[in-house]
Image (cartoon, rainbow, N blue to C red; front, side, top):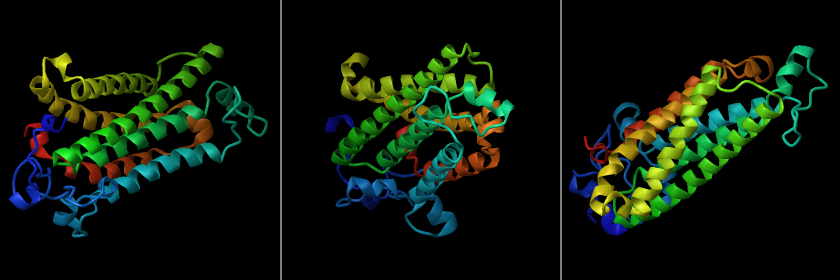
Length: 276
């Protein structure tokens, strides 16, 4: 699959041009250097930091801080309440009557599963962004696929729990902005996964390797859009009755942590990979 990358063996950081110029920064910024392991990609990045904060190669660290803080916010809000993760209904003995009705018709596991899915997707983006040489891209793509595959399974599990709980309690479906955004996000995640897997592993479905490669930039673009859509869905979740009555996750931490994550990710985008 090395020939499918269309990336020269030379390091663009040395050449000073090529596919490895990030959206913000110089050619070679936020690039995986020869000799560095793939794990370095999870914290690699320059671009925006080099230009604005002068903190060196660390934009991915900002993204990691943002996404882990967002995940921790959701998980902490679930675990500090008397909710059972394994029973069909959350534990409600210590809740006021009105809150009991919300806890009966909602289930905490989807909050954990969905936030974990977004965390995994963010890691999948971070690990692949800095790759440029064929061997790096091949290794990065395998890890990207594994992380996103796990993310899809996690999100699917969350959806199943949601629907099971709705059906078992004769609940309403897809009425709130959060529910509608969530459904759209699930669908886009599935399409994104199908396109990503088929274009890389079975390019013949697109009429050959060359035609499959022409789809890559759209897959990359939609991946970033999907990440923003995921954050919007989490933000919308803070406005649901369940959250307001039980979890009490504020909107502002979600927005702040999402922005922090994007500040770390977006400067690492390689313009040429998007056809810019």
